[in-house]
Image 1: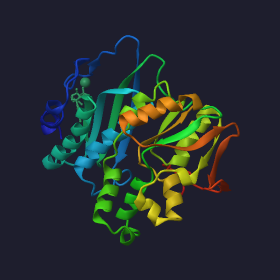
Image 2: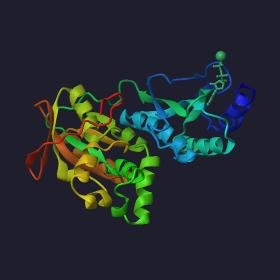
Image 3: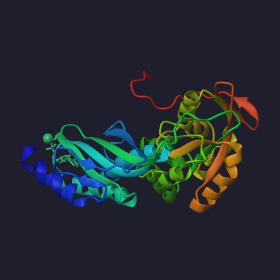
Image 4: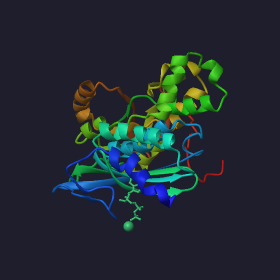
Length: 325
Ligand code: ADP
Ligand code: MG
């Protein structure tokens, strides 16, 4: 790959990136040089997408590029950080110019929207795998974390959940005949392939949310991480969990399984003390974003789920690599 490796990097990455003033040296040297403003903290997140594991082999390259950055930006959103820089480690089976063009189109469409500069990376040959690291900035000691929820705080969720997992089931067959409307199918696939990171919401939640996480592995599992980190429990109202009309129509047991356990939605789940709810309402109106109260933090450890006020059992551990089943 060595012969065309450098021209490839120039053509599809170096020459296409968005530029920021705080990058003193970007792609082309042994390391990038960036400047963190005084009184800011640097936040970093990294995620790998492997073909066949994180996306089906026939996923459009534009969507792969878009999603590889989106899932990372979602982690910054959950921390209330402002995105700044990214690196990209790309393992490709071969050099396919049209694939690279579409992949970088997808990547940079999102990078530009959030003012992210690609500052470096690595290019190797092998089975298709994409690793993106993003770095963001947050005023000193102001980052939102998973720890910080306390009894009485409300549990909130942006947008709706379950559609990405529903799209995956649709692709794998089984439920397609029930989802008959083509426009609905397209919408579901969009939720799976082009998740929009909740950057603006994450930034607005600083000073309002007591804890936050992005929903990548499923609501029950990810809320569970907030509870564990905060040393609290929660009671969640299943009938309040926002889902699309499509998922609601499909009913039990798909509704419960995907609302509580469906991953890949990249919405924000966060907790808010009662006295901050009015401020949250302002944010909701300003950003024109759906935010739904789905439960409450309590002292008793663990997650309890109720439907119409009656306790029900759920068994949704969320997606885990290396798990047996
Ligand atoms: P080195 O051998 O010093 O690690 P490389 O030859 O791997 O450097 O890369 C040359 C330059 O191109 C470096 O600045 C590196 O960060 C950048 N780069 C390599 N691959 C990518 C990529 N896929 N996207 C963005 N930048 C890349
Ligand atoms: Mg070097």
